[in-house]
Image 1 (tube, rainbow, N blue to C red):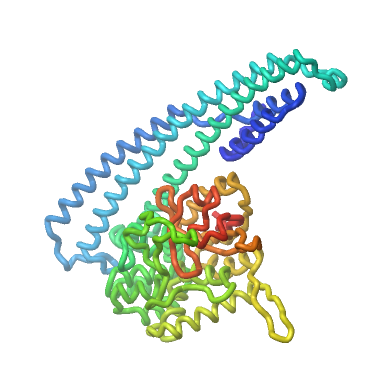
Image 2 (cartoon, one colour; image 1 turned 180 degrees about the horizontal axis):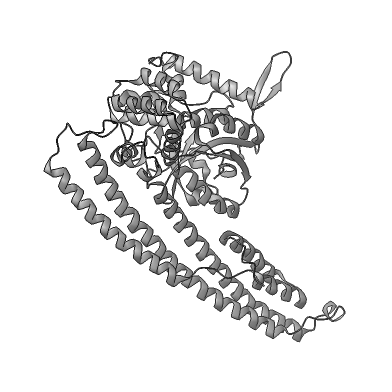
Length: 534
């Protein structure tokens, strides 16, 4: 019976192996076994008609969303009084602008989801047809071969028997190739659909803040707020996880604490200040701690807030492919910096350095401690560098980083192992996202392909994913590095490198060993990821 518990990547991998076994079989019985092995792999699953119906439904919903978008635009143009405010002080103009963008994104999401499902329907139908044809050829090959030979018969192969085996091998090879091609088609289509649906599910942002303590207008305005200096779509202050956690924490507050927090939101001087206060609450801080944070950021303009609270801004042109540098790295990148001083490692501290910056991405209170010091007001890049160095050293020790000793000249850091990386990621990042990390090896293209949907779902929700890459230097010695996937757009992944920048790579770059685009040509292969638990 077919194994229906297989993933699309499992089928792809098993059929690749079966195809190779058929091509390499040098006996009748060996060929029969290889063919049966291929036939045991289940066919692509899915009902093309159901998928097509769902796709059509989503496209119709996109048409409705576009009508809502047009109606909101009409309201925006009619003019609204500035005195109207929501519970947290969101002005009417802000709310209508957020509703306008939300309706536009909703239409885009429904249309994209519909297209993804229609494409998946076509791919599944094609893959199932190709798979059926391949199975017919494999069964034809078995008919040519007949029953298995006995032990002694299999020891000697006559010329006529060899000719029959080779004819069957040719038919079976063509069939196995078709089965593998069908599995590849189904796998690629399933991953593409999952990527799109995960992305747009995470972008249904206002609904993620499921609390009755704020008005729908206020939730919408909070979800829509982005950092200064970049395209709003790639730079929302509140991630999907932030919105989930903020709503849950507000619902659990005492009436007094809830009233106090809502008053802070209402008194915020900008939408950005309001969003960062909500992000601090989502990161796990209590009302007293949020109030202390509020006192440090209150009244600051959006540029100041971005500089101190968000390590990097994704620029509008960041997805452009501007080629590669001589060392293999991407030309196009965005700096992660504070007043020009990069969020970057010193020495072999790539693991703790990426974790420090990863925490700053999800925890604005921590980010302010790093950039602004105890007062939260500092602009001194030297002091920032010293604090960054101290944090990198602290986490290096807590993650049991290694040392090489050269008596009497002292010791030199040699890096951190995977266990230590998981330990410090769990300690520093997990409390602020609610998801602990687990390490997973990805030393083959199939393993990397299989883990992609989990990576993309995690980063779409605002949970950074540490990735380890490796290769060899000009002397043939192993070189390793730690980076962090922090964003996703279409089939592109945004990667933070603790050398102090972010860049974009394709899914194929990740799968096929071109991670050197994020670092340099010594390190092309991803070999380990640390995934947040669902």
